[in-house]
Length: 419
Image (cartoon, rainbow, N blue to C red; front, side):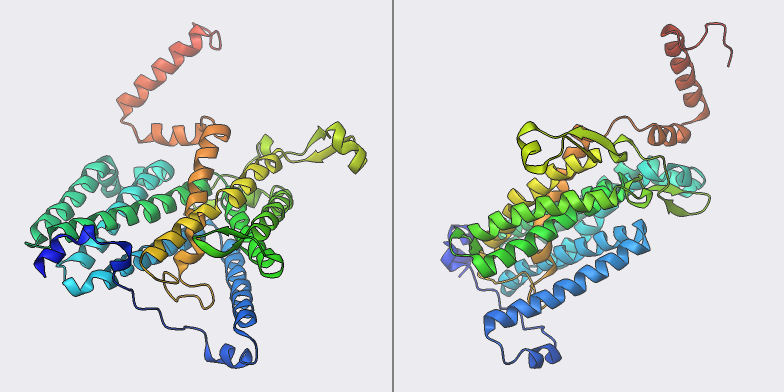
C-alpha cells in the first residue's frame, strides 16, 4: 500500500478515485410542479426559473451600489474556492492528510489580505491617512503579507508525513492553483469595477447572455457537436450565442452609457464614508456621430449614426465573451471529467455549483483588465494625488519642487513664480 501511495502521480486518469455525486438540491415544490415533464424539459424549466431568480437578485445588488457588488464578488470567490478545494478533499480524504483543510483556508486569508490591502492602499489613501494604525499596516503591508505566507509555508513543511510526501505536495500545488484561479481573478473584477460600473456590468452580462442564448439555440437547433469535452455544446448554440451576445452588448452599453451611476469611476469619499459615482463623463460616454461604411449604407439607408464610443469597445468585450470566454467553461469541463464529476457542487438546482456558473467569468475578468490597461486607461490624476498625500511633508515638498522646475522648463510657469 505505501508503494502505491508513493507512486500516486503515475496512475492513469481511469484510476482517479470517484468523487461522490452531489445530492439533488431541487426544492420539493418545484419537483412536484414539474413531475409530469420529461427529464429534458424538466431541466429546461428548472434552469430557466433559477436563472431568472439569480438575475433578479443581481439587479437588486446593482441597485444597492458598488460596495454590495464588491461583497458579492468576495462571496463568490470564497464559495468557488470552497467547491474546488472540497473536490480535492473528497478525492483524497481517505489518506487523512494532516492540516490540509486548515492550511487551505489559511492561504486563502493570506492571499486575500495581500490583494485587498493593495486595493485599500490605492483607493482609500485619504481614509488611511487619518488613522495611524492603518498607516502602519499599509506602510508594511507587503512585509506583513509575506510573513503571514511564510508562516503557512513553514506549517506545511512541518505537516509533511513520511510516505505521503508526493501526495501532500500535489495538494499544496492544488491549493495554490485554486488561489490563482479564484482570488487573483476576483481581485481583477474589483479593479475593473473601480474604473466604472459599466466595465463590470457589460462583461459579466455578456457572459451571462452568451451562456443563456447558446443554451437556447443549442436546445432548440443544436445538431452538430462542438467539442468532445462538452458533448451537449453544439456549433448552432455557439454561433447563435455569438451573434446574440454582440447585439446584446451593443444595446446594453447604449443604455448604461447614459447614466453617471454606471460610467463614473467608483471613488471612496472619506468625508461621507460612502462610495461616490459622480463625475463629468469622459469622451467614451459622450454621444458622437460616425459615418456608416458604404456597404452598410445601402442596407441601413443611413449615412451617419449617433452612438457612444464605448459601444465600439462593447463589441470587443462581447466578442471575447462569446468566442474565447466559453473556453473557460471547456477548461472546467475537462477538470470535472478528470475527476468523474458532473458539477462542482449542487448549490444551484439545474446549474450545479457557483463555480459552474462563473467558470467563464474569471477568464473574462482578466481580459477586461488587460483591455482597460492597454487601450483605455491613461494617467489618473485623482489616484496620483491620493498617493502624494500619504507622503511625508519633506517628500511632498521635493515632488513639488521637481514638478515646478519641470513646468518652468516647458514654459507653462514663469521662472519668477514663487511657491
